[in-house]
Structure formats: structure tokens, C-alpha cells
Image: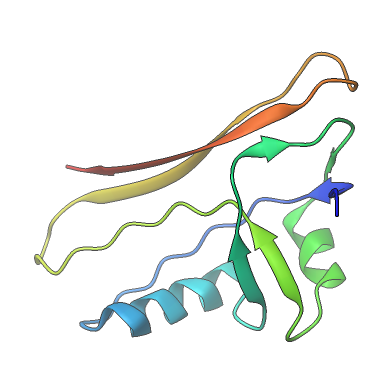
Length: 106
């Protein structure tokens, strides 16, 4: 199960309940119909980066979808937070790269 393609997406959800805000973020990212399984951060050798639109078209409702996910949440009004993914691409297609999760508070 080595991925041949990868795409990036993002989503934001705001709600007083954590679970509902997470659902809203998944909807905002376009991946709400997937069964998401988080994985560690290795980008396989030769993995092609495709557009979000191409990636979403390739997914099917209920499909197990592997994802490197960065998320953050708070219950403090007006608290600044961030969650992001960094990508380190190898210069050689024979080498693997990294996807790095980051979460911070302002």
C-alpha cells in the first residue's frame, strides 16, 4: 500500500463542540465522506503531487483514506491557533521525502 499520488487540502470548522467543529473542517476540506486514517510523515519515492480537485475526484464515499493530518482546537474565544503541514521534497525521485505536522497557539 504505497501511495502513487498525494494532494493537499485544508479546512476550518468553528463550533462550540469539538466533534462538530472537526466535522465542519472535514466538510470545508472536501473529505467529509472518507474514513480517515492518520499516518506518519513519509512521502514515498516517486509519489506525484496532484491538485486538490484531482485528488477529491479520485476519492469515493466510505473509502479508507490515509492522511497526514495537522489539527488544533481551543474553547477560548478569540484565541489564535494554527495547524499546518510542511513538505520536504527530495531532489531525486528515488528518495523519500517528509510531511511534517505543526500546531501552534498565538
